[in-house]
Length: 216
Image (cartoon, rainbow, N blue to C red; front, top):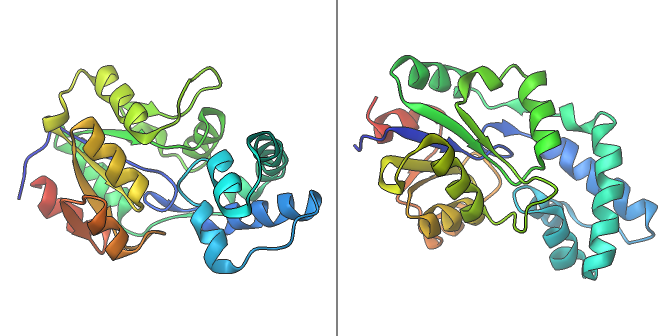
């Protein structure tokens, strides 16, 4: 058991299961742009990293093609698929208890700020968080470590006071690069092996297991 002053949460695949809406929007973008469909296993890889990175890595697009695909995706996603998600069972109670005990909570996500705001407001989640770190249009990077560091600065915390919760290697690697401990959750879109190999200090199979790790 460890005691932390704050817990940082990834959004997609950690706070909520946003897979259905994301995968539907990737399918739409590929169809609109004349690319062949991707298998389910490959679509799952889009949940977590940035869209431009994913279209380049998993479809083989150039950077300019990937940016165009991301815009097609976002237009469709904003049209309704953004709300095609559910908050994982146990997370609301966990967040409420962390708040009650004075442990700060922050969202640290690669989802663009505008879309992050829409989700937080639609699902009435914003009240739980003292900070939200997500990519802004003017940012030079959407690297997870960059975003973790932004949340640390906003809350005036040192890395050793914080644990990052996420479901993919990008969350684990970003947390470790920023100097924070990391909890890998197995109910999202990364594998247990991926989380362990990318530096997870702890693993949680349900949000309730996070309680003992953070000392509540």
